[in-house]
Length: 472
Length: 101
Image 1 (cartoon, each protein chain N blue to C red):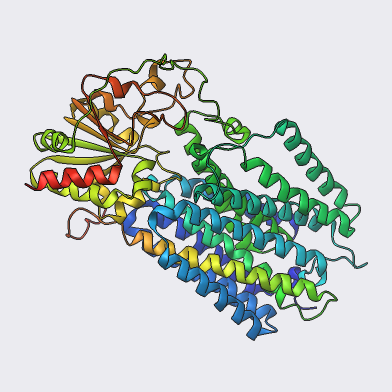
Image 2: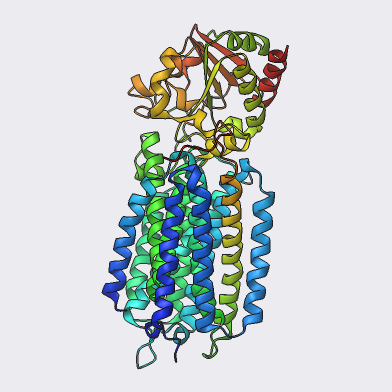
């Protein structure tokens, strides 16, 4: 039995360690766009080393395995080439579900054939520590899978984005979670199949139950959290296999997702628990001054008005949001920015951390439309500039510009850091219609200010018309 | 390797991850998620072991492993390729080479 994990030869252990270090470098590369491509290459080399090492150690039945890699790899590669940048959140959610499922499958095959994984004692029983690791790995993997599938369905619009609330769901969820943990503990003493498969089944169920009540606006947190889970699942399997590359990667990915969830929660001023508890945005009547049924007066403008104002401005700050992604307005927006720059106007972009459906969503879309990344600024770097700006151009964002977050303690978004668009001399606000409110279900006083001009249209069409008016 | 040394590697890696991830620029958070996705598919190591197990009674275990190889491969190739595609889009204002800083 030379493929017992604890009997891994020294060269292979070194190779896995090198792979782990390369994965660290791949994340390190992302500290700036200039080094990022190199980082991605480190990641690929690390993966190659890990796979080749494993094949050299264990390689039997190579043709079938190489075929499986080629088959999966081709599918993955094709998806990566075809996917639209606006669909990135659902792609990432979909990929997370695959990691989760792979973890479950690996856990199941380790349970069915523990000798191959070198996790048996002299009596042929699965080792105690391995039972806990297997149980945890399979549970986390299954949660990652079913949670990501729901996130994928919601993000791709195949399922409504609004929260689905089951009665008594908190109690139900806690009960299921407690049973999973209890069963994992019991699994240590009794490793019969019924226990293992019940853990797996319950974990699939809890992933589904946990994500179903979470609304669209909280997706940036959910997707980061699932990212984190996929890491912990890999780490748990790494413990089972005593594999350094898997453990290092699991820890990296786990902390990465956890940090992103933290950043997203902070950007919404919500606790992680309240996001997980779900239901945000379900009751639009919660708190905040609701228009008393009377339509408040607002100023509507045309594309020509907007073009005229911006042409004569010295500085324009563009605030993109999820609506820009939905209407695919980023290319028209960049064209508008170019025309304004040709007129000598300073153009900058202000990104709120939770704009869009995943961390950094807006940045990718702007990069796709060739907006240079040094014109794109994060909230804390640009917020002081609104007071000096002539125009704040809000496109497809709403809650992230709502000044009530600063003043109204009863508002559900109170305390959330927001972009101070109302401080600009003029606010141009693109919105589909006056009817809808943001995901938080809160009215935005910016609509009704004297210096605000509402541009009521589809974001892309509006920007295209502005571009036309700027052209002559 | 005993459990404690494995645990030490894990805890250290968590700290490394913490510092490395905080140094990632927010503009690259989407590529970060895509690339972490790709590297977490290192779980393919377990899938390969399962699918190449020569002995052991379970034929099912082998096929489950092979299926996991396929899923992880989708993720590895897809994840790295889409990250590369995204990163290629990030450009600076000027054509001039960036000052080495």
